[in-house]
Image (cartoon, rainbow, N blue to C red; front, side, top):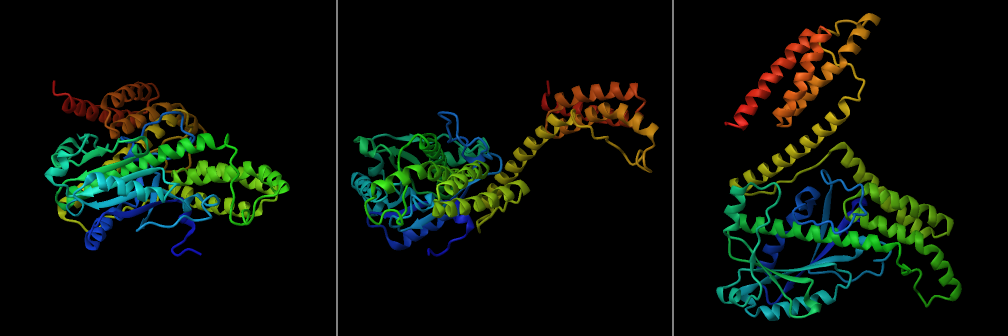
Length: 440
């Protein structure tokens, strides 16, 4: 059994991190210690890198609360004979670490990285991070561009402060075999800037992997590949075993699709496929794969439960004051975005809700039947006032005023003067906010 295995291992993407060229051990350790801090990437942070080329098979993707999780395999890892059975055992990405002063010939670095990637046939994304390039190396770069894509949550001021030290991207396009492998140059910079660049590149890798997972899942059901484990492949399959394997193919494919949904951070989609896999495996007597689907389903349920309850642990590693301020600002922006989406959900269902909104003046005692009738008449006006409140909290004073105007009219018609005063108060606030937002 592998060390460091838990229920959540099934949702972790394995990334081989390998040294390229004669990099000093201390520097390799230093660079990788910075890299492994980015083991969890929120889905909301990769939107600027992600492109939906076709309708995503992950229909229940939790973009506001989900994440991709990485397990960095320092020094690489040999292929596992159980990769078909447990997709998380595959090395799905390769990151090379190069120290440019120790490897002056970039063409040689690219060749060495290409050779290293050949040992990981299952990898879908390859990147080589080359640190501290010299001026002569930059002159040799065939395609040079400064990255101008900021994370969605970074303000222009912070972004442009960092982009002055921007990393340089070099695509090695000598031949078709190198098209997927990218050399990323990190010019000398302070610790904070380097951390920012690493974080951005890990987000880019996460987005690239997500798009590759989508491609894999979309073509998986039409594929005729027979998935095997070492238990199946001790010898060449007999004709009878081939027939049995074909019957089991669909169930195994559904289980594997569930695995990729889990790696893509979509536990609800994963569970749907695992449920199908469990039924098919039971019908075909494929009990080993039944157990594997059951294991994946438990992991998916655990992640889904965490997502529903909103329990998110944000880790802030030790850092200088400026870096910590930057991380805090990013997290507050994330909280603001989450609140805005929750406000939208509340407003969309508010008018159809039958809830009777009350104040302490209403609820001194149980409502009589006459008071219940009166409260029902007043419900729509109170709902409009409350929707106005949420529009105001969401930073939309014009929408707020529209709802407050309706609430004022309804409260006047139903004699609900206390809520009339509340709507009037909110309307005044909305008008003031509108004036500050538009000084004209």
